[in-house]
Length: 138
Length: 313
Image (tube, rainbow over all chains, first blue to last red):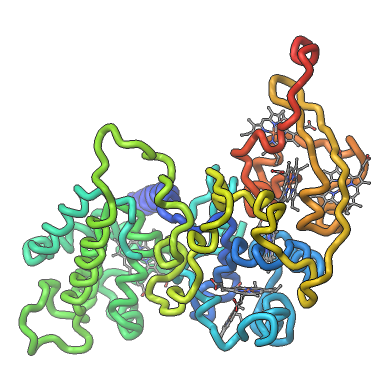
């Protein structure tokens, strides 16, 4: 019993601290980390930089023409879809932008970083930046 | 980056001391584990490798000692960064890991080895970790001016932290060589009008001045869409100015189908919009507060001053 209490205290304290850790990152507003499958496949999670792409393309190119839903992690992107020319693969095909053999340009997040929109209002109000995988799945 | 860039130089100096005195400090491995790691690692909750269990630890050690320390420092799956104690220094976390490996019978001692001959592959390369940590500390001390009691920007990003290079931004992995090939936003933005919030640039001005020219079509740079110049005024109760929703600045970036009908019914006044739902990421908050300028910029939406009579109501 005692150890159960100790464990739950430990977890609670741990969670409180991760909340404070949220202050730590300084990434660009709108950077999206995608980690539905990457960690499980032992790849670094993917960082998608909105700022970089919106200089080159209007939102509608991705969010209307290519069908990206407005939800981080909500598109179930995987490598098969990409090599078949869907999602990132519609451009990262060696014609419009560099091709997918450059794994680590996309798979560039710190290992363990959960799916998130960096610096979002919600993140600032409630959710920790370095939440564990489980928390990020809400 | 292992080290929190916000670390004060005082703490960093303390850390340097710790590195210098590590032979002495290493004795605390046990204490650090007891205070920070034991709640999970004694009991093995959430599949945490258990203290003293060789079979729990051996396969993990095989994946590399550095990797283990890194995971313990950065957090991994159900384990929070530094076991949930951000005050722990990376070296202390490494000491704790050493201690757990000793308990599991995988290394003989958690004293840092000075004897080169006894350093086998399996032995934790404590020296290397210390060296890396020292390098990082020196960098942090050099970069961060001392914070005094009267310092500003305690809870706010200072201007020098805007648009940092990827390897310093906290989500990109500085150990990934490709990270250094990515563009630094600060450089890309150098000619664009600055703004205190969001990406720290004003995208509307950048577009209208022609500083950026985002394609309307994925393939054809010449194609362009039709702009719709229709303002919708939403009256706001209370003192805040009314909201002007401009179709023009939106159709410069978006397709009608991005908003209609999934987010808004295309009929003036048909949608009930509130600040609370915007803050929670609904309605205007689908984009504002994530990619388009954030909620903090009240005046850009609340742009129509009220008539005096309105306020008197």
